[in-house]
Every structure is written in C-alpha cells, then in structure tokens.
Image (cartoon, rainbow, N blue to C red; front, side, top):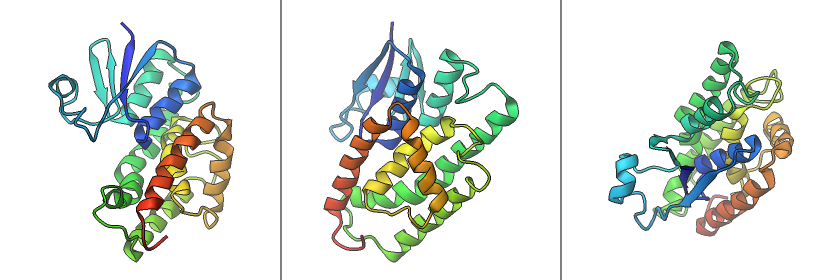
Length: 218
C-alpha cells in the first residue's frame, strides 16, 4: 500500500512536508486533501489515526504519525537515511533538532499564533503588541544565521525546509524582511529548493487572504 499524507495545502506545516517530498524525490505517496473547516479531521476514520485531529497526518501502511517536524525527520530516516538534509551524525542532528524545536515552541506561536485570530475573523486589527511579538520572533530567528547561511550550518537542511513555508506566508501577508538582512538573504537562497515556486504560489494565496481580513495595522 502507498504512503498516504492527509493534508490541507494552505497550512505551512503541511507545505514543509510537501517541500521535503519534492526535494527528496519521494514517489508513491498518495496525497489526500482534508476539508478541515468542514470537519474532515473529526470523522471517526480520521480520529482513529490521529486523536488530536491535526494536519499533516501520515499513514505509512498503518503507522500513523502527526506533527510536521516528526514527519519530516521520519521520512528521511525511513526512506533516505543519512541524507544531507538530516545527516545521521548526532551533533548535526542535534543542531537541526534545536531549530525544529525552536520553531515549534517559539517562532510559530509568536507568528502564526498571532495571525490566527485574524484568520478566524475574531479581529481585523494588527495591534502594536502583535507587531512586537513578530519583531521579537524574527529577531531571534536572525540570530541562527549569524555564523552560517542556513539555519543549521553551512548546508541546507530539513530545518530550512521546516521554516520556509511560514516565512514565505508572512512575507506575502505584508511583513517586510528588509530589517532582517540575514533572514532576507536566506529567503532568497531558498530558491534552490525544487518546490520553492510551488510553495510561493500557495504563500501568495495565504498572504492575500490574510491581507483581505485586515482593516488596520498593516
């Protein structure tokens, strides 16, 4: 049976997995789009795979896995072990994992977590507090690039693939990277990824939708 990825293309975590699949040249993965707003993640079938009803969710012949960062590293370890995107070297893996954990615990909550009330149409105003948290998140992320061109060293890794969809969506939502020169240079360097243009197209849709909901603060 093929591997099945349950996804929604507008989700940055989902898009990171799609980027990795394309970068690794993985074939035979069945993509199954889920209508999240229509309750697609709360069906009995879906909950039997993932009781947390989140996307992306991976079904590898009955092995169910959710959380995008876990899926990213699993796909490499299982199907391209030792690949340079996640090399089988403990110290290099540790550095990559540090970035992945920073994204999950700090960067994503301070950026997309701030944008969520607008996407849910609970507010249409970007407040000064929201801007301050965005600035803090991007400034902290810039520090990862002080010594290297990529987030976990001298070469592109799964850490960069994890972060790109969030950052591209933020850029197209109207947040300028010019005051973060290292981050802006990194973003430009990401054009080498095979799925970069496809991700940009979706990021433009996400950003355009976000801007359409904002009445003040952009």
